[in-house]
Image (cartoon, rainbow, N blue to C red; front, top):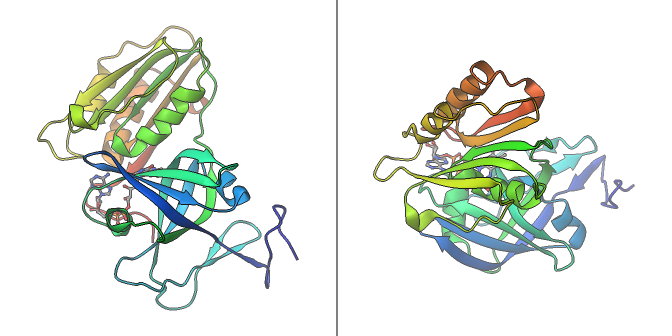
Length: 262
Ligand SMILES: Cc1cc2nc3c(=O)[nH]c(=O)nc-3n(C[C@H](O)[C@H](O)[C@H](O)COP(=O)(O)OP(=O)(O)OC[C@H]3O[C@@H](n4cnc5c(N)ncnc54)[C@H](O)[C@@H]3O)c2cc1C
């Protein structure tokens, strides 16, 4: 039996898509781009937001889970040596069979450790994907840190050329800035936290708090950063800006002091 995309189901379960590292590039001091290759259909299905199955560095022989028809992940019994983490495909090129994932090398956790050690030939797997939950609007606020820079780069690249607004990017310093092509009416403002550790600065929340609400209702705000920061920004957008649920998407991309996923 096969799934709609042609994958084989065994006992109602299909295998995950396994991708192989073909290149590793340090984009900035703290961001490592891993280029993965796979079947065109697997690459097309690996984003924009993607559930990565990352082999734990201390387990060279991971047991991959399988996927139910409804998309749920079914884990093998016992220890499997795989961690589930959310990432963003910075670039997907199904024709070339390539997808780029930009990993923040934050120094802790299975995904950061895997990326730090990634070499051509290494593998990871994909267990489902989702949209970036953006909505079309004439005025856009984009706000995030290094972890959501891949998402914000895609949002800027696909925004209508007539869109206006502002993108706030919090990074450690100028060495972490990346070119972000987008509509000329969206101003990109880099916020440098300097020696303040990630997740402990109030730069993003302060920048939004200092921003006057644009007039009218043709407004959409997209926010992805450390959870407490996102909570502060979300409260401001719902309260002072009065944005309804359909006018904003603000989710924690990581939690200070806590591991994500399983
Ligand atoms: C939808 C979505 C898309 C995402 N896309 C990307 C992406 O494209 N690139 C990317 O790098 N991240 C992305 N993230 C964030 C990423 O999933 C988290 O940073 C995740 O915690 C990394 O897993 P880990 O195994 O390295 O660390 P975990 O095991 O989850 O955490 C271990 C420790 O590291 C800390 N930690 C986690 N992330 C950071 C960080 N960025 N800086 C400092 N400390 C940290 C935690 O607080 C914890 O103490 C995304 C998250 C979501 C929800």
